[in-house]
Image (cartoon, rainbow, N blue to C red):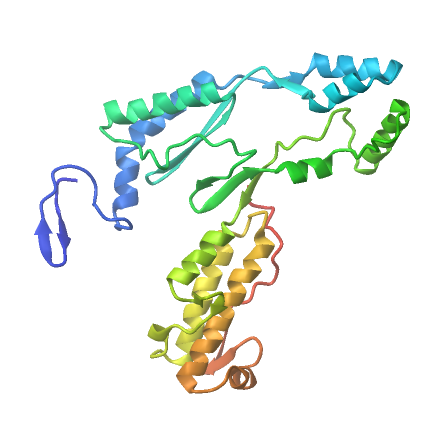
Length: 324
């Protein structure tokens, strides 16, 4: 870390810190070395604040109201039942993950508990490692209402629309609580739901940030005013090299987000890159788009050195559920 570095052919002395540019080839390695103590600290913090066993239990008030309503319908009790959680938290959990100098802490607990964990983590970084956490990135996010971003992913829970779709629908004009109960039981049985509590939005879901990817395509000039366009710097390549270059970009995006829940929306990104490739070939060969499709087919197949080079096309856009 004290060896210095070369910048534009000139040696720059450095007595403190890691390489000062993003994407430096040694930055991840140096981050792993320097942040090892933070990993050890967070392991201790995780063990200290993670409650063994269950962290939630059935809410007695919820089941009391439910049993009371079985004896007779009461509008006030029914409204209270709708807003009363079926479970209550009795413990806390802390999870930690780091990649190079990016890290995230997952917490099962209230906001005060999350604030305490944040303060302990930032205090250790400041006092022990002389590092200042980015105030812009180091924030508390309730993923039930807002996405947390980490390593290019959006981490969420199901939003209210998804949650409502999981609940039993109730006809408010029907004043018979027993009839509503029978309907709910039937619907739960049809969904193979065996527990007598409302479906919750506890499953963590990962999304690819489609809007950010679109903005990046605009920045890199693959997309201009909502339409794909050719890339000038690729025009000087051979046609098979153009297809290979685009395939690498498309395959990289597809593989990186292979296990996200909104994987089907990647079709939009791949479509833009596909037509950007076609427009680049069209400018290269001075042909129309139709001419490129007539010459290379819909899948853009190019024969080079007796090998067929084809533009990347995924076999499926279904989420890879094998990855956990």
